Image (cartoon, rainbow, N blue to C red; front, side):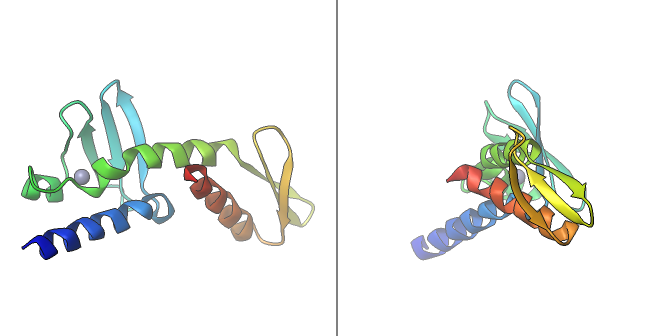
Length: 127
Ligand SMILES: [Zn+2]
């Protein structure tokens, strides 16, 4: 039984680490309420004071396990904030990634490469 619980917790923590890169988004809508939206556009409401989430996993396991949304909303907000501070602009036939102070970080050949750099740097905000 304890091994099953450890396995379950490890799975939840593994999923938390990838939320931002998978396309999850979080938005603080009230002082104690955050909306987490998955890449498919489905949103769940987190009540910070009550430490609850409206997702099916949390409802099913309430009291025993907390979900990846509740575990991960803070890191998601931090990574989003870091992401928003970086900008991508076209630079002739290339793409430039700039930091919040207007310093050039990198120039890439493809826009998808610039976006990849922007996302990877945002993930590093947690380091
Ligand atoms: Zn949840």
